[in-house]
Image 1 (spheres, one colour):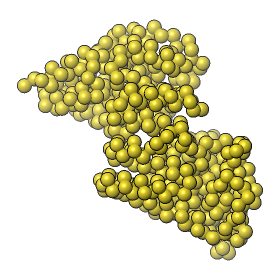
Image 2 (cartoon, rainbow, N blue to C red):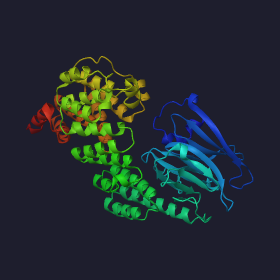
Image 3 (tube, rainbow, N blue to C red):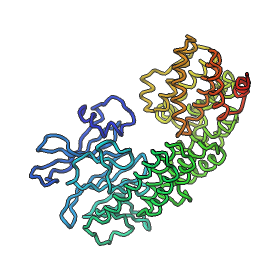
Image 4 (cartoon, helix red, strand yellow):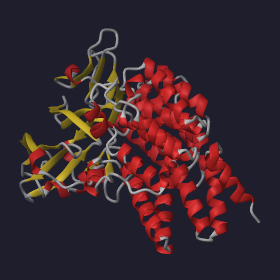
Length: 505
């Protein structure tokens, strides 16, 4: 198990970076055959660990090592080795892809080609690692609907919406379709993924207009609606990470309700609208979607909270808004954390702490422990400590580094780094401590460039770092940083203080 944990595809996909525990690890044997026709058999295994992605690997009896694998950033539900009428063997995988909005996926691996690690197209190309060309997203997946028969996998059984996958790469509504053993369909898919990667290359070269033209052409040539939506997700991410918000928004489906995964598209649309400063419009999209689509409201609650705070709401009005729109989270630890964040921005921290401490989180929350430890781990603890440090008092409880690591959240880790830097600066008042505060502020700023849920944390860090620079006599830096903060959050007492500093000569 410890050896398996070092497999690079697992390290690439692993979002947690935690220690590997064999207690949660097991291997399923699939099949043994001479897949590459070299006269020596290969065996296929599925590796499962609850803190890693699942991976199907090929072990060579000739070389006594792993010679190929497929890793997916999600769960592989079913694996099926089949032979086409032409005699070639394939491994069909069915599962969920986390990166592309929790879509169902189906992957056809030609076993004779597993000479490299084959990674799904939802991650960046890594050196010698190859993309899987015959990779098909197809919308929502219900595991109990999957069935295999001969050359066909049934992916959806709902009457009138049946969906079948044929091992030459065709997605169809009908099971009765003649299977062409040629590679024509696979070649079409492979060329399509080449076009997708071309868009990413142009964005990396800072050519957004050319990239947008290529993206629009690729979307117009999509073999089906599912692959089109998959490409839209990728283009959205590429443009967003490049800082091109207008293009990212343009890549999203025109009619969200008609796309294969409307809930995923709604969350992405809400995120980009918030990043563009269109808070009211974002809230309308998120509210409509959270009530229309079958997805945990938690996905919509976080960006909705960010938009509400950035509108300039006081902590009382934010709480009332959440009670009305997301009552299931009104008394949650996350809501209390957002109240504290709002109180800091309004420079009413003492009142904010008193207000949130008066909220009984056992009311309306079906499982407070689950909310605090699974959905929003360490969020409240970190911001309660930051609020107390901001007031100049010793925090009653600071979460341990171990707790934060176990939250499996890069966002919380960044906020925790800011907390520790703030404590250090308040205690020592030294330039070295200020540098650490700067580093943590820049980290939050970087995360807020693509994740709207981090904008409030970034705004707070900018205000605190800016005023800290002013205290240390570094006035020009203070003015520049406070300008950023005021631009993002121009409301309340803190903004008024910042504006006075900015106007100083």
